[in-house]
Length: 304
Image (cartoon, rainbow, N blue to C red):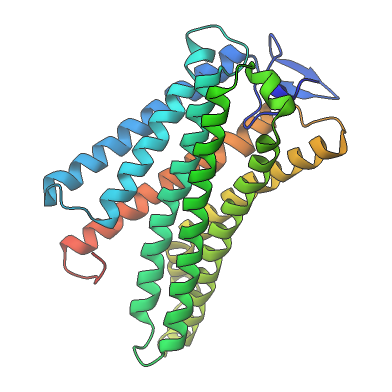
């Protein structure tokens, strides 16, 4: 099987949808384009709407939420454009330029998620007693580490794209011979996992603080469940999506190194390695940021 079939996300080559015991339900390139292009186009329009809302409220002054929306807009726009060969050009796989757009999209997605991680860390730091400087310092160090890894991943992605663009080889030939491609398969899961574990740590700290409240025991089970779901649902769902994508990327890398059969580009791959881990966190974070906007406008939170 060609290494190109293994690119992230691997390009489907089956001419139609088929149900096969060895390969699962295969998706044709046209179906991938018909799903992916409008999906990310609508998401990019939604993000653009929220970004314009922020610009109308407070002008062009840089803020954490504006930065998040701008990075997410870059992510969704680039991902939308990466589906053009499938949707309009009748290509059966990525072209060089569309694959580079996808790589940059992943990098911007990680940095956008880092902005939310920073905001959650600021909320944790604000709610921690000012006398507990050790915990506050540890949280700041964790955030700094995650941001550093995400920036390094972006720079590595840039170097990979430059090497791919300058290479006279086709995309398939480059994927078969470039060591940077294998490193890419390891770097993305590493960055995804660090972001996910950082968010999980914040979620656990938040649960501990909720359980330590004097009024917690007097609340009804329904109220407790509602509070926990609102506080932790977005955090843990986003972390789970990133770990899911990272795990599947590692599975692909393991198959490539061992020379075993690679995971096919079937429906399960596109759902659980591509669409769900990117679209679900984006929608949840947009909703979460919108709730924060309302609290800020009402003067009920210190987070700016």
